[in-house]
Length: 85
Length: 85
Image (cartoon, rainbow over all chains, first blue to last red):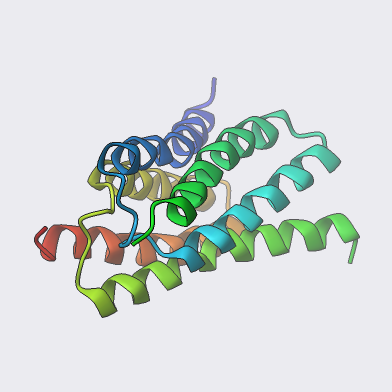
């Protein structure tokens, strides 16, 4: 595998899995007042669009990465809307 | 422009600009305890790797989107480290 491909895979792994610690953090503290509703609304919209884009262009890495990110980001958005400030 | 390209551009716009409301939110409240340090550490690492990847493969949209996201995510990470819980 080319070194540049490894960099891309590491990049995708980090930006996808990064949302897991936030899910766990918010689940444990049951507090989401410092999270921006605007951020998670816009971000979830963007990730859904990336997923649609990946499906249309039939790009498996795009579909996988954005599928996982979408689930994690939607959980955080749900927490933001559920755990009242 | 192909409709699929428009979807990709809209997706990139959303996932890039999404971090701006979080920057403004945290700047206004001066509170970052609900933000996960793990998330922003891993996410910033990933975005820097995406930027390196974009530079190596000479992909202008990747460089632009991740350059902007990197600045915003690093500001949030700085806030997390600065605004004590």
